[in-house]
Length: 413
Image (cartoon, rainbow, N blue to C red):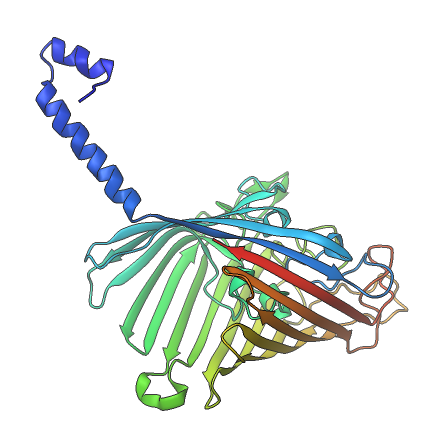
């Protein structure tokens, strides 16, 4: 066995023996190989193409990860690299999970701990632990996705390519501690505490940022979250696997607000430095029709410093027609009383919109192995008949309707 020069030097003066050093190196090597053997590396490359009929893209529909830079062209959306060691069946199991993002959507993710924009960001990075209490108490410590919502930050897991308004007004990422427990096969719950509602990593709800007060002057001020999930058991026949889910997140968010007329990227947290609460209730239902599933989601954002509330309700339908072909639809109504997403008009004599309808149709055909390929048509309509989209100057929309025809190609590895 070959030893490094420091081991040889220590052996020469009798501090260690070469036999013990050999055993130590074998043990270290074995530990490293054991750890690496249970670690997986995966991810995806997400690309898209969009055509937006009409002229003027200065005021795009303000759903998460949409921007004027994605209109009428070809896009690299994001590259995700996942490094994961899942929990095993041991009583005191431990693991970790890391999601790294690269590209324009990483910039809009807004998790950078120094608050600056970057085409590299950490989406998730947490240590996973299990304690042998009852059925097993699971912990996440670090940075993790929000526990509420019908849709995911990960577009490859969503039924549609574009995100809903309900998803847009939800919290996105928290830095904190999450505890989960499965009471039985059909009932589970989670509860957690975080620095802020997020998404900026290691952000605090106290002190100052860039010379401005960013939150309450108390170190104990945190964000709190909880959720419940009910899953229909096998004995429920065709409803087996259906889920009902509800939860909430409440706390302080120090991120700068954005809306359709601001310069802040749409992917970032859609609320001002303020106390807020987000509530979610949703369900996914199996049906007697093979491959047909229905869904419903309700999201409400209450920013205490803003008048009114912003909420959205959406319905989903998915049909797996064949092994490779599937169709997905979403219809959604948004009531933006707080003008979180659609700013109040600059001109006091012009009526602004606070009600929007989103209709989205998606067809997916998995022709290539490991590739998600889909086309999507989306229509956003201002129900107030007030201009909310388009235009050539930010802050001055001139269209009541926004149309998007897109293609989304994702390679998963």
